[in-house]
Image (cartoon, rainbow, N blue to C red; front, side, top):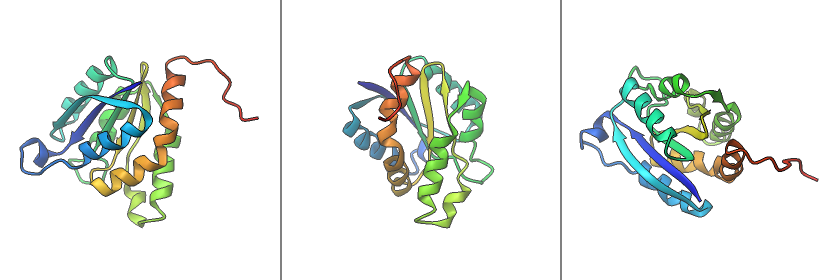
Amino acid sequence: MITVAVLTLSDKGSKGEREDLSGPAISAMLKGIGAEVKHYEILPDEKEMIKEKLLEYSLKVDLILTTGGTGLSPRDVTPDATLEVIDREVPGIAEAMRSEGQKKTSRSMLSRAVAGIKGQTLIINLPGSPMAVKENLEVIIDVIPHAVEKIKGDTSECART
């Protein structure tokens, strides 16, 4: 089983001014791959706070999915925090999400989402809207179990025959 932390990054959500629909949408989709959300929090768009939580949860779970804060506004700092925390970037994940998103909206190219590895934890930034979360997670959800296995040290061959 893949253990997961979901972090929703939203100033309004952290103050109770907006209901978080994206975090629960992530949790529901993850059940399909046998993943279990062990931790769920709503945080304001504060880079240092996000970094602290990413570091904390990277010691506790296999996968951290963030939602929100991936755009161009001055308060969108999730990718910046993630880049400061990860040991290695996994650019293909974010590239795949943006590429598939382009088929639905040209605004997909404005996403600054990143993905990477901290220790033995995969961290992936997702957009903030529930529909965009669903669309982006659908693109990558099938590779998450394999990615987690490899990060954890699985040495079996990956080549297709």
